[in-house]
Image 1 (cartoon, rainbow, N blue to C red):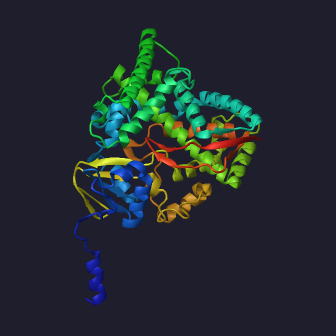
Image 2 (image 1 turned 90 degrees about the vertical axis):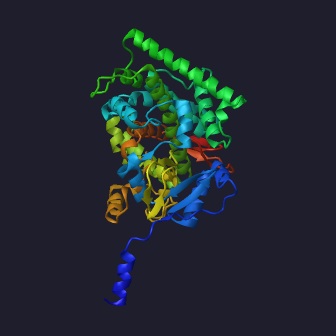
Image 3 (image 1 turned 90 degrees about the horizontal axis):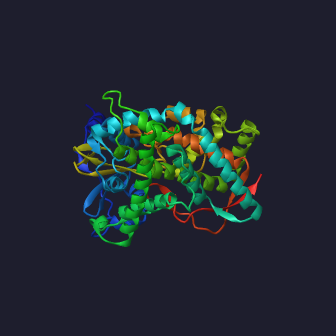
Amino acid sequence: MTTIEHSLTRLSQPPELQLAPEHLSGNILGHLQAFRHDSLGLMMDAFNNCGDIARVRIGYETALFTANAEDVKRVLIDRHGDYSKQTRGYAVLRMVLGQGLVTSEGSFWKRQRRIAQPAFQRKRIAGFGDTMRAASEDLSVHWGEIARRGTSVDVAEEMMRLTLRIAGETLFSQDLSNQSAEVGPAVTEVMHYFNWLFKSSVPLLHHLPVPANVRGRRALKTLDRVVYDIIAQRRASGSGPLDLLDMFMNAYDEDTGERMSDLQLRDEVLTMLTAGHETTANGLAWTLYLLSKHPGILRRLQHELDEVLGDDEPDMMKLRELTYTNQVIQESMRLYPPVWAVARRAEQDDVLSGHLVKRGTYVVMSPYVIQRHPQYWDNPEGFDPDRFSPERLEQAKAEGRPKQAYFPFSIGPRKCIGDHFAKMESLIILATLLRRFTPSLVPGQRIEAETSITLRPKHGIQMTLSAR
């Protein structure tokens, strides 16, 4: 055997498993403060300093950040049963949302998913198109008044109010966006409550008699009362409008014949109402931001809207023809994925990227980081919707880019059940608003991403609107 052959043989042998490299810039509490105040910066810093995988101490717990798409596949698909949702973030979500589809696990989650799945079939989701269009049209009228006045508007707040209305009307046929009502403010307060609990380092904070706990619990009681009242009215009447609540109440497990209890209905409704509308709202806000920064792409999108829609409404047939608009949404979610991180807890020892993962370790996979990885994406920081054209996607597939390099709705068995709902909603809203208005970013403002349940614009996004 030659020296070269001997070297190749040695290199081909699996190395001894070691712990992933540790990111060393933390203090006595590790990287807790950095994770609380700049989670994205911490993950990007770990990636730039340690490569695709890094070990980070957050308080007294160890987390493993991985930017390797193959690790994502192993954790969320290949060995998903060995990685649980027993993490801090999900523990806080359970305090707020209960055991809904996002937070539940095991056989209970499988049963709930089987029951809920028929409500999210494409044909049923298509029936909500009229509700989405009507709400978008009403916002378009409001934007017309703003454009005539020449004032600016916070599009992040506008999208939050719009998607809350759509969520309320599709869930249980009620408009929740009216800020004079009690439900809209309660939903907003619950979101603030989650962020406060999640980012705090004080143990058992939710047991302390502090104002934030009082406000959060009061808001949850308000939502519970409203939801339980609606459920009771539906059960008493025996029928209701064809909304998601009606679908949930009438759905049953084909294996057991069981239906959802009132508590399960409450958990699923609050999950859809809070997490569901927030993800779409923030995704739309970031899309409008990116389009305002790239006027050439905005003009091309508006040209497609003019050519495809003309004076028609964006119905299901027309939506399928809005290929470039869909590419814009996909590219926006690549750069600003509403779900910015996915965390799991290793329940068995495992190996990721050739490194040992000990049982009990938190594994954090960030779409924000991986979808900007130069190994998977050309010009990763650039806004280029054409990268999602059929030709470019075929090229990327031929070049070996893994599917898991793009997962804004997660992947595997726990992929978001409402992804088709969110995609249709985003297309209808953008088509309705951008065919009539050109948004322009107000100069001089600070645009900053904040990591809460979703990736939201921390200070909002102020824009002026020009009627086309």
